[in-house]
Image (cartoon, rainbow, N blue to C red; front, top):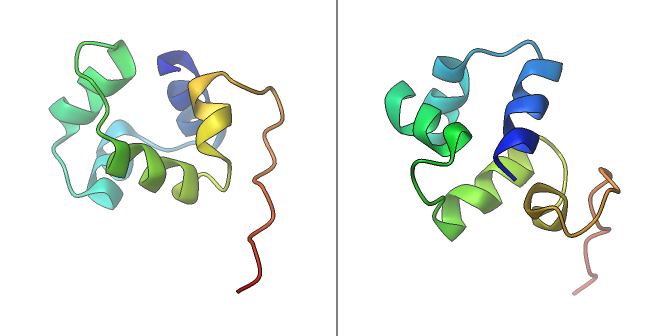
Length: 74
């Protein structure tokens, strides 16, 4: 999972600081997420998936399909 969030960030040519700003956390906290030194809270995982336009399953390594799931109709 940690390598995937780093790869997504690098593929988008973003710095850790830029992603941290989007997540409303410090660059150090975000760096610890990427390094696997800090557990990623569910709300941050969801925010990362939305930010990178992917699914939490992709971030967690449960699928290799990067495309997000279609949203359910209400």
